[in-house]
Length: 190
Image (cartoon, rainbow, N blue to C red):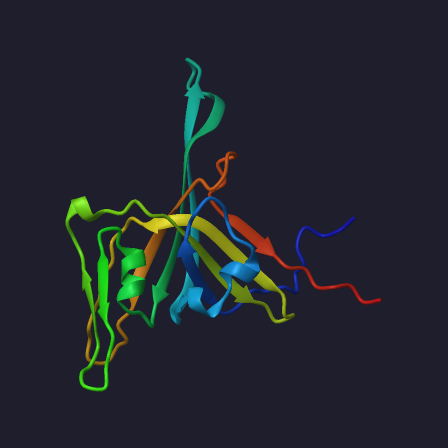
């Protein structure tokens, strides 16, 4: 009989966050996990939160005779340490970014405008947190989502400015899947 979990495996450390526009499915690792989709260095790792809501049916004596899930919420939180206007636009549905490239005569400029409900773009993103374990295998946490919690940009004298994002997951398939947690398993020795 195999053990439920290897008691020697303890997951420590942070990882990478990859984001790209969601089209109609979760892309393959080789498409998603590329430098262009690695949004930033992150602060304090990432936190996946699953919160079910249950409805209990009680009989006239107050005993629960049935309990079932009425709602499920999944969020993926992370602190984005290195960011720019393009990353902010992925965190804010009403953000618009325009860029004027630098020339030999003038500096370039990126302008990010936020606000105006009519500017809400309705976009969803594929968000993946990838952690490399000590054995070289990866743990991947993947959602289809958008940041629905807002954000703040604290500019403090002695601290890095970090976007604390809380991204809400939405169903990514006909089964209602909100999150995929994938664990690579080490190759067996011959």
